Image (tube, rainbow over all chains, first blue to last red; front, side, top):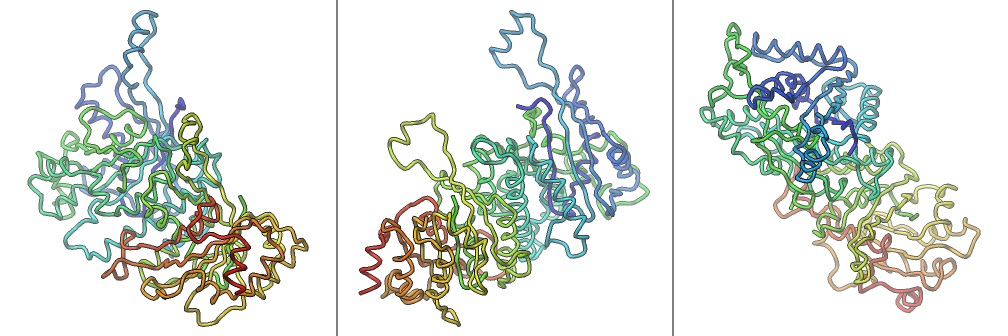
Length: 326
Length: 256
């Protein structure tokens, strides 16, 4: 495994990728607090000005109840460094540590790349409003990053599954995924130095279904939103949105030992088991939420899983390659 | 491995290629996989998803290169023999293919001719219910003659006929239908340029087959292309069917 693992985030526009990345820093703090990580805390550091600005802006959520991420006019390359605890040593490693005086494994540092563009990640033929050159540049940037990535985060809007949404709109949203993702991965294979089996180098794929709280709300699980989302099988949710055929097609790009992880996720998180009402659209704008009341749900966990450092008690469904889409 | 996909129009070839992802997964064999490995293959996705969404198949909207497009893909096949299974230390090596898609609308380019010279397989397709019947013999003869070489490298030739599954003639075999669509005189081209060991096979495919009661927009799950992958399995990996025959067999059936 590479020393510095890399993670790339992709997904269609307006799915909540920017909000997910913006909340990473706070999500790390809340996770450290929950799990009492004093000796090996998870650290998230913005490696450029744009990323640091993003981490600062997200706190406006607490004051205004809304996220301040308007569209951008050029590509912004967010770059984050995440320090995750070393994986627990195996029995043999423990023996070595005991007898050879070796030190405990050091925390792992990984790089998270998120190239963001107008309207989010738009690709050829997807968005007539987007500038062709911007799209091409974004695509090239993504392809370059995916070629060397260890983990891939694919964002998907969990709230598409909604009784009030026209089923044709749900189908179109799913087809939009099938339209650009296999094409992007084909292009990565064309440009990367393929591994020994001719597939992508990626070893961990995390399907992150954002806005899980909104899904719970739209399906009238308001009071028990947190439990409902925790108990919702992420794999089933992804299949309900995208269908089995999509995953059957997708898995062909990956090696047999690639792991697919499915997360229900919410940047807003939950409050006392229910929805984080102060962040919802109809909330009173004068209500200010304290920092301690904001606990993002499954925001940093997918990123840790993407580098083999899943925290204990994470709500995730893990599947092997040949178990998805069947 | 080099190969060629020849068709009267871009629509016929594009729809066949665009359905291969889905068609391979429908075989439901974990070891059989199809992976597009260049941008041209990736560019087929918007075309087919647009059809699933609207019911209109229009390759020209997304296809930036309409002529002589090189499609690259890899096919992973299960180990076929006991000997292969015994050699567990050997890794599965995919078959890589550079398939040049070209069509009849103009004179064949030097790129197409050069590609044919090194090609191991040729897939020729047409529609059963085409509004304009093509003179395949004329086009094939023109293409092969430009090689200035009677010793062609083709080992497998697949005839593919597009036809909705509910309209396929039940009385005729795919071989007879191919004879009717492509014309028996095509045999003369193959007899002149191909080796006697060259193998031929015949396929009826329905790329646009949907589950009953499905209507546009429909999901990927509702799309069940019929037999679209089979010509490629024969052409690329040599997987034979009960109809596979050599040049001699073709002569007997087509020149009777």
